[in-house]
Length: 276
Image (cartoon, rainbow, N blue to C red):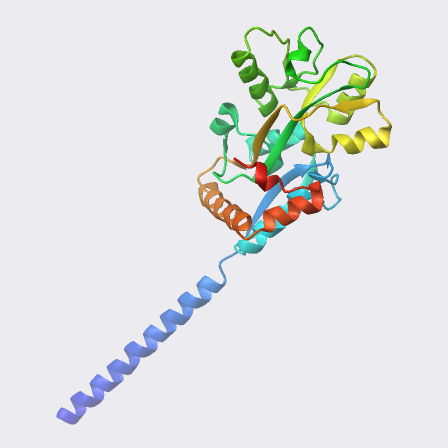
């Protein structure tokens, strides 16, 4: 009787062990087969050296290289980049067509409400004033009474100018907000032909390349402000995890020197030293 019981117990134990092994193997297989999530990313189409590459052309520049470095640290995602116009970036991000948009973006109250933004910046941008070489414009105070190219409503330039105005109430600057999405190379030409007196923009969008290539008689001022730049992420429950993963990867890339190396490669200087 005891032999029968022992045999039954052995068989039962083997069955349990076998079942457990199958369950673990199945769980392992399920884990291994978890799909890699594709993340759609909008980059600037004409902001060399920050990023450039029209639709159908692989984006190049500082931000595409940085995105590749971020993706290398996050194998659970597959980043797919597409170069699009500035206005298409934020519109596509708001509607969910894109999960991430990069374009040297500043934080602003409006963007913080509309999008998810990592705590860790991707870099820093130097704000400059672009005007004709024969103008007397060298700083913000010189913009009093001047015609300034309209800026994106709620954007970083808009925020900067209004903040500067609050801090310098004795100098009234007339500036209007616009969502027309006119490419900045065309805006530079509008300054050149006299439609406007000045254009205020971050200097990492490739303005100098346009000025040199188009042989424009345009000069850039010394930096009038320095701002951190950030990835913008479409606001959704699913992207809460993406936000945390990207934020962690950006910190690691700053700490291990990758961010500095990419900055030196594309901008000729280490923008990490300007990051606040």
